[in-house]
Amino acid sequence: PWHELPLPLSRAGRGSVLPDRDGAALPGAPPLARETIALLTAPALSTWHGTATGEIAGWSGHWIKSPPMITHFVGCLSKAEAMQSLGWWFYEADDTSADVAARVRGSAPMGAILPSLLPLVRGPGKRLLALDGPQLHAPMHGKRAFLEWQLPQRARLAVLAGQLGRAAVEPAVDCRAKWIPRFPKDHLGIRQTPGWPWPFDNGVGVLMGPCAARRPEGHPEGLCCHPVFGPKIHNNWFPARVPTVHQRVLEAAADEVGPGTARALAAGDSDAHILRIPASALLDAQDQLDVGKARTRIAEADAAAGHATAIVVLVLDAQVPQLPVIAAVDRAAVCRVLREGCRVYYGDFPRNHPPPDDPQ
Image (cartoon, rainbow, N blue to C red; front, side, top):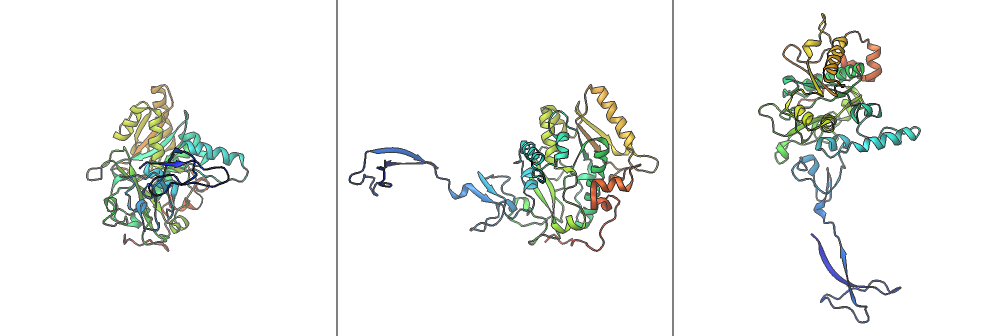
């Protein structure tokens, strides 16, 4: 709320002169002058976790319904991921941060998008590769089962995207999965942390936000969940900076192309800028992905549309419920892209580090 209080002007060198509690000027004060003072009240500021009042607004997911004016992501292990999931990240910031990193020798990437992927997701040269299909939205009910499905998808999509000159989009998560940490008073009962309790080293959880993508029947409408991993998952399973981008980057790219493309993407349809390919159509005789077949399908779509296809979506179906490895790409090439994550690409999971399946 705004409040106006008439204050007298102070005389030079004499400090502030305030009215008494009845509003009358003190003896010797100059005439009253009107000054407007803006006060920011405490409810305007909110933190992800840990204020003097024990606030956990970010963790609890209530920012989705009631976003605050000013936020502090204290206690959030992945701030850029959380802001992207909420739809609060402005990708123009990545243009600036990449420029700074390029100009300052030794500067590490600071934005949400790796600088090497920026030309593929921003501006007229955008080229993205994503996944869709019923299996992608299946609510897996164990942490290990989820990791053994989700992480190979990321790894193989990243390698395939590199072969096709595109940016890989990280698969989303079904918000109904039982391994997600849950608390009754949180938004939809979901606690947005990589596991529970603190420090979440061994955990995996989700970050939530509103989205336009169509969701399966029974899933909360207009809501998307994005996985977030604890430090030990990144250390023992999968590196944090694999060349992929958040699902929000895909939505932002479709919005930039035009409203028709954004609507088609949300509905799971094709248009002049979206090509949907069944993954089963790209298999070779050994049931591996044939990059040549993918290039041919994309080239045909480009020729028919008269321009490059911005978004390619591989559809996982009953024949191919999980993205297979890519034919004719050797292990050395895979490991150059994924580093220590290349073992997950081949389904070699760390048996000495099974995360507990108990969501609490």
